[in-house]
Image 1 (spheres, rainbow, N blue to C red):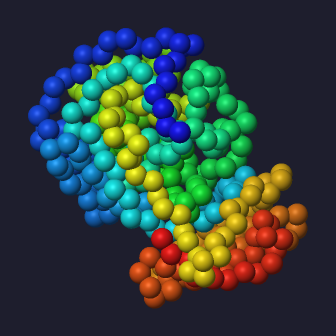
Image 2 (image 1 turned 45 degrees about the vertical axis):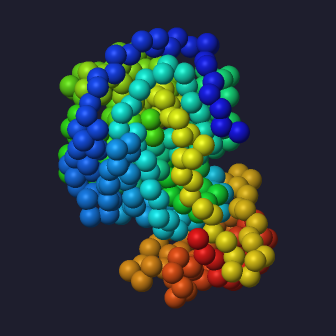
Image 3 (image 1 turned 90 degrees about the vertical axis):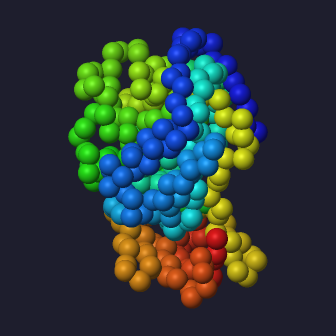
Amino acid sequence: MNRLIKCTAAPLLLVVATPVFAHEDHCAAVTASVEDAGFSDSVTVTCTDDHATLTSDTFPDHELMTGIVGTNEQIPVPAEYGAPIILAPEFSGTPLTRDAALGVAVNGVPIYDYTGGGEMSEADLAHHQAQHDTLQTGQLDVCGGHAGRGDDYHYHVAPTCMMDAMNNAGEDDAIIGWAFDGFPIYGDNNPDGTIIAEGALDVCNGQPGDDFGYRYHTSKDAPYIVQCLMGVVTDFEKLPRVRPMTAVSGDGAEPGRPPQGGVDDLVMTRNEDGSASMDYSYQGQDYYIRYAPSGTENCYDYTTSTVTNGGDVMAGEFCR
């Protein structure tokens, strides 16, 4: 269950003076962050009185899945996703956690906290969860992301491949994403290029900022990226989730289980016709997950041979 939690194990910022922006100014800032990064062709920004929504297919134009060892035997599939960013952010000082995305990168890919172990508790926020650290346990690709149970691609740490591909790559004041509470996400340095002082980032990996009142950062050490939300989100329960694939037959599919000890040589290949293949080996045997558009919108024909299913070849049509 989603919940508000107050962390007392680490010092929190008690007061942050949040500048009051006109909604259209905040909308313009969100729109500019996508345009300046060069992702306007793949991400649409629309604004209402309350939110700026970044809509994309969560399928970035960079390498996917390569280098994963601790695979959950899930493969990313395009998924239409609308990420709502609050246009009047308000700092609360009370960490808000969620077992789903906490924000979105400027290329439209959802951003999660660094863990893969479910919703974080108060104790979890205060202490590093090495056993659930998706980076340290080899669950992430060379770009900082992977496919989750929804067969959706998302980031758990700094989205390095996206950041390198941005038109404003290397600029410390480049916004790389937005948290759902309306506050921006920057890289490892302050926007003015100065180094972030040790201990300056709070439990959610954020700190006060002049432009927006508060901001989040990536970091080389855990928690690597936004760990929780420090702003007010009144519609927290309604934040979007990517819908998993469903078998047309109605039988469903068993969720992938990480093979003990991890796999070798995992590589995903994408083709211009929308088909994709993820190939890897485990204990000397080859396995794969492959799909191609079935002809029905948002549906794909799968053929798989996975460790989870004992290497048996399975086929079926799956849809969003």
